[in-house]
Image 1: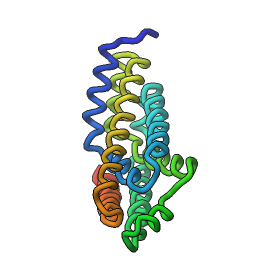
Image 2: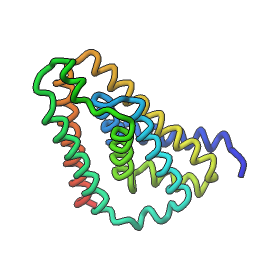
Image 3: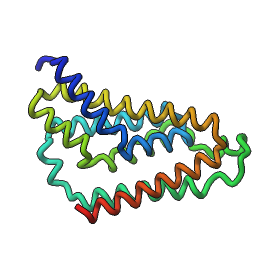
Image 4: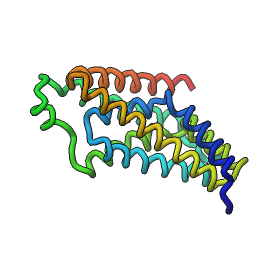
Length: 194
């Protein structure tokens, strides 16, 4: 198994562009305004690595998963995230808001991991990764795809931190909650439209 730099760059470019407008980027951004960004990034990155391993190892099996069930579970997770964000933030007191922020490595990591792990099943980037692995080699595709997914998550988290420092936390939470509710609705529509 040798590394093919062109295959790595190809996988990175395709997956990076496909993931930029994806729901996972927006979920990372929302989580990054509420939780410790490094912990969120580690959780999302772990989920992405698992998905890449699954995609390159058994790409053809992905299409066999029940799409409706995966989309409905994803919708429930996004709906729960929307509920949490819209319910919190009764005032703009930063000290009080910091007390309500989700903390601790394992709670943040597991929340981020599960949000990405469930919502990425059968996603365009997972299918693209499986197709690239078949054509360009497993290891090179895995490296390029994982790096792209982790980079998009990092960009979203940086944007989330930037926004959180300049916009009142309550407004950020409300916008994040509305976005998460929209992603939940979109997941339900995807479940029944396909």
